[in-house]
Image (tube, rainbow, N blue to C red):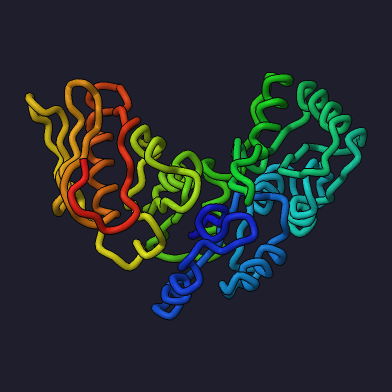
Length: 330
């Protein structure tokens, strides 16, 4: 189960090496699904985008938070229920395809619920009316709560910023369909099947936490949002089973570091030539030689051991991750 933004593509460009990696998986008989919290585009449009990037995909391979939100609404309100939709065409289409009736007029009195999603053309006056209706009791489903998403010009505000505004004004909580909540990955597994699903993502707080919520394994790749600062601060619910700098990690063994508490050195993590340690001063230091991915595994072992033991995040202000196989580093 591949997240899209930051894993398969960034903006309009494919992440290097993604197309051959996914092709190799399929050739080996692995089922592939593309899972996205982005509710603005229809599954057909996402599949077309993937094909244009050299990644063969069918609409049925794509599962969006809009589809998961529509499934939640259908289960709650039944076939044919009128639902107020505040979002882009992908959300409107998902609601209609699920057998519900999408309504776009925020004043419509017949609606039984409202669903919100990322929509750059949603106007403020409509949001104001929806906010009041949510405050007054209209059931609310949010496609996702992502505060940011990686755009070609950098991190941009996501639908989560709008959710925060509606939540604070109405003092009400939405039912969330996208990661890290369960509905999106439950919907993906329901559609695609598979005995041992693996979630591949770039965000600890959505992809990895979502995988833990549905009790499936996860691989964090370092091509998108999460980097060193996020990895060392990861809480247990956000920690991946596997970590790799790129999707090549799908085809490699993932040895676990040896993590020990030593009175004189703090938490020490060693793996295949690397030694990462967080001393009494809380500073994480690394020395040794080895592969880039083993560096990350050693670092995460030391950082998480220190965080669990002390409740404090290791200081990595002066630590630079390697970008290729390296010699001794300090």
